Length: 66
Image 1 (cartoon, rainbow, N blue to C red):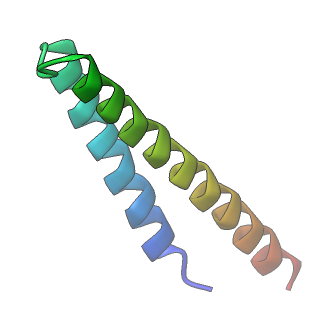
Image 2: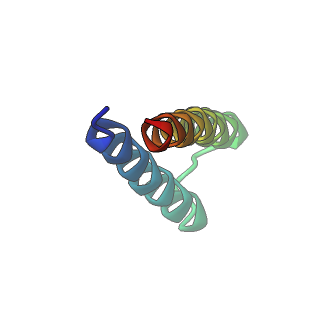
């Protein structure tokens, strides 16, 4: 199986997480609710990224077993 799509998504999620972290560090959140929302976005992206990495590992293990 071609893993390029999964690797692309992993990279894009990492980039988006970095952008949000930098904006939080610069004080972009107007209030605590917005801060919580941005932290939730990061948490969601990290969860999706973990799932993608698990799937990548499984696909590579499967391909190696062939």
